[in-house]
Structure formats: structure tokens, C-alpha cells
Image 1 (cartoon, one colour):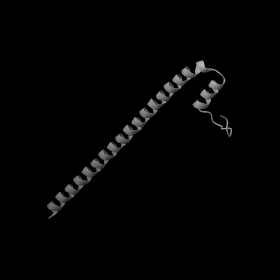
Image 2 (spheres, rainbow, N blue to C red; image 1 turned 135 degrees about the horizontal axis):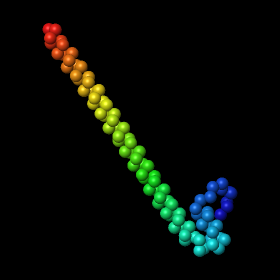
Image 3 (cartoon, helix red, strand yellow; image 1 turned 90 degrees about the vertical axis):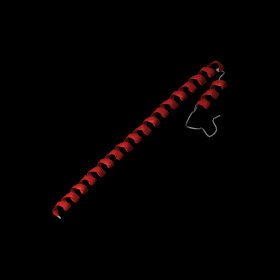
Image 4 (tube, rainbow, N blue to C red; image 1 turned 45 degrees about the vertical axis):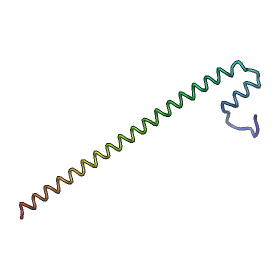
Length: 89
């Protein structure tokens, strides 16, 4: 188990040690708790990713609206200039 003396322990290391120490009665509850923890973390990660995607979409929509407003203002200025040119002619 301790080949090369790893510096990090993971869940399988702990479960193996529990088996070696003959604490079998704790293994099933530990596995269940570990699975519940992993599912909770997965849910949090997915919620975070959805929020990021929503934020990106909102930012993109705001940029589109701003660009559209800028284009509308530019078109109005061009129209006003054209009208002024027609009056001068």
C-alpha cells in the first residue's frame, strides 16, 4: 500500500487501511458517506457551472443590447445628417 510513500491519502487508501485493521463494520457506512459527499459536490459543481453559463449568457445579451443601441444611435445621426444635407441643397 505505501509504495514510494505517497504524500496524499485518498478514499481507497483509508478504506484499505480500515480493512487491514479489521474495521469491516465501518467500511460500508464510510463508503455510503463518501458517495453522498461526492454526489453533493457534484451537485454543487453543476450548479456553479450553470450559474457561470447563465452569467455568460446575460453578459452576451447585455453586449448585444449595447451594440444594438450604439448602432441605432449611429443610424439616427446619419439620418439627421442626411436630412440636414437635403435642407442645405
